[in-house]
Length: 238
Ligand SMILES: C[S@@+](CC[C@H](N)C(=O)[O-])C[C@H]1O[C@@H](n2cnc3c(N)ncnc32)[C@H](O)[C@@H]1O
Image (tube, rainbow, N blue to C red):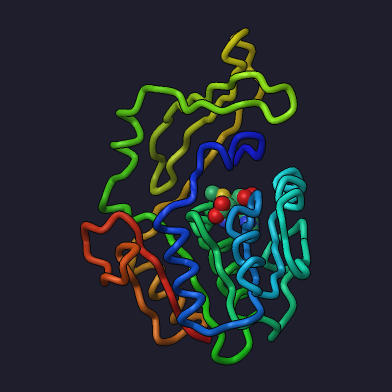
């Protein structure tokens, strides 16, 4: 994630509305926004009156996040799931495929165990991830045009180019490069890696740490996941 351009190329969408709708249905108050990034959803959660702890290891992203509007109080943590308090939250939520940044079995086990520990009994664990069977990277690789943005400080036009390295095992690697569109100067280059886990793998891992009532939605309209759906939205209960 490149905080300088993230909000400009990741627009509010149906997925974000769906997360708000799930929270509303769950009737919760205190939430942990794990992998909050630039606070795109955090600020919406705050506007809806949730008490929020927002966590991300990316210090720069948290700085961007803090500049948004937050009625009420948000607790900011530069850190990870190990920093979450125990038995403290009604919901732990990870939006925009944060679940895919955990590349090893060990790091995935750690984050879901920490989410379980951090939730009060009856608490909700909500996150989305991409379905490997939908092969979304094939669409990504066809798109040869850069995203565009404006530099927040200088006002200069930026281009964001993506190069795809492909898979090693079930880990997909790509690089994002931010360039000044006027001068062609490269400003930022970041390696991004995503792990594609199957529905069954995630389901079993959640069960193993103790989650129950595991629901898997396949779209942003509460339809059940199938083999073809692009995303899996997991909603389970401690
Ligand atoms: C695709 S962004 C999603 C940001 C935000 N949730 C949203 O909806 O816009 C993925 C985020 O996961 C964060 N991340 C990376 N490693 C993490 C970890 N170990 N624990 C929690 N978050 C992590 C990144 O810093 C980044 O902000």
